[in-house]
Image (cartoon, rainbow, N blue to C red; front, side, top):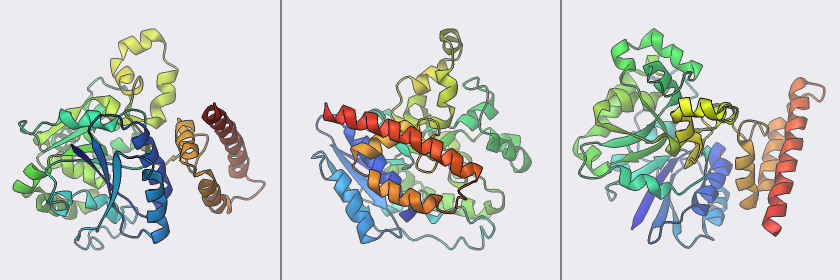
Length: 337
């Protein structure tokens, strides 16, 4: 059996993608499964491809497939003031036509580390079910729904009160960091065109475009999957601080963090930029195992160069770098045993 896992990203995410693929394949243990890692990268250089191939090559149960970027409409007029929306985001809306040879696929972001086998998600969206798509609750959406899953969510969700009706907000449920597409059903329904048309028409109010598209265009055909398949790193310290009684009273937290499959660095606080951020040590451990520490150091030297030596940012960076070196030392010692 082949498990297709599709990723859409640009050159800025090559190093995170390498760490993602390393952690994914370290946990790829389902017998008889070939893990086919598909990459849609519109601006990848040959050196970027070589780095990703180097990470995947040691794993005999995996292969890397570079797919050509599918055509997209011109979004420049639709999103004139929203330059932070990358084209790679919208590739997720045309995957059914981009991969006509596939009936089903996992679609995942690369700002993640895996903690368990991603193949566990595959059977949770069965062909005989009516659903076209499966995903995991976004914390902010869950809080806005008043589900009791989480007492608070991301403040960003408050923006939905301004531009989205109560009926629309009720349809927003899943995040986009980990999804399962029934590509065959989506193609039969012509869903890609419907998704793209909606994205263009609603560009002025878009906050998280692809998630809004999924929820508001036949969101009734989305299956919600267990929380452990997309645990959010930024809230993990809150879980760590909970007492046993608090965890018992809030079982959703335990479901998400006790044994996560994917740990998603969902906010703008990414570990490769902020080495002292929540659960960054897991990302750096995977970086070290992939043999990419020097690549990160070179990248971070450029990233941190604008910091003034006497600035608070520089002092915070020095503290975080010290913490990272301590984590790296532990990883190296563990690898030598």
